[in-house]
Image (cartoon, rainbow over all chains, first blue to last red; front, side):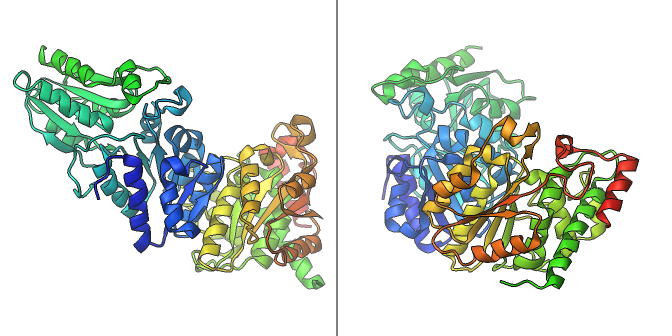
Length: 309
Length: 275
């Protein structure tokens, strides 16, 4: 089954996994219709916990469930599952290395209608700053399926951010997800573009546009933490410079992680992302992305700048 | 239910021993949450040495009862109980909060045997306990989860999220205990942020409420045993206590929320607790 929506991919994969792994439990905070936790609720109602609009309680309850051997997935919009429950995640789940998976749905600008309060531009920054946390940002629905399997198998705290909307896949179906391993989607020599989530597809389109003009390598960084600095440095050997692209603030997310990894590499870096502002409402996803500098054109511009150095 | 004088006296002595252990673990010149430890000592003694099914040689045995110290700052009290029970050597208590010690300022699930989950950020333990209660029920394990909260702590909204959810989920294998010593870090609860009336709040959230004298061992045991008989709703035991109980110069003294002993007061405390 090919999915073109990360939330749907997530929800269905949980159902599949839940059939054979009886320890998987899913918790929602009155958003299961959006997070797609409702698919699990329909399939295994006794293992789905509706916790009401109480994300802090939901998260700590998940911690308690993990301590009885369950593998809990907590769901809400990224602003809430990661942001509102930050303390609960940090203090009990991460200090204790508990086996809880926090899922941040409708991350970035992907909830275009609800506006700033529902658009998480900082979740990767603060989640990756917590010790013991694994941070995943799958590029598309195909990768989401495999990422869910990987984090279910991994023993420890994980945060995964998901996009709300339908869009084409850029990664192949059925490719095993390896936590911590970025994948080169396109080879190139001059400029290396590290992209994550929805921006990976845009980066590929930008590379198409610049075909013949700039030799671009596109790297899908779907694990934001842990990042293997050695691997990142190897990927940029011989290039003029680097571009990072994320549906997230330019502060502290993928851009920050790559810059940290490359701190001794002396490569110029252009960051494509949200320029330290909150989001805003829009009638469609395209509008809100354009407004916040998250387009193919912005990536093209950044790549061109680097290539011109 | 009738409890023998012998049992009651044993447990009272145990509670005093826990208080002594707390003082010893603090030592001289190092701050510790002695006030709230002393007010909870009788309850904790009753749990570890009468009520709870647990085995220090098998800290992870599947059908154990679980204890969560939601008021995690009185970790030294829980450490005292765990040491007394044999989870780790009593000598370890003297290393509390030293670099490299497994005994941290607040309970650390990775470091100390017998700790069920990390607490310390107040207001979260009841939720964690609810999660455990739900997990145990799902696996049809007939164990109980006891969560000890403070009366200042219950200002945290998450306590009420958990209270609402526990009632909604009919978590009758969950027992909350509120150590109502009337004080918090900055003064009397009534004066700082009045959370009264307390029993009525819990009742309105759908809990079975039992109010007791938290230093009367018979009342403590009665309440704990009574909680076993309540089906379909969780139970909260509101224990009226004295902060700093057992140490005359600490009783009801705000400063001993996180207090320190001098050479003289250390000696005096141990003497008083040896009576």
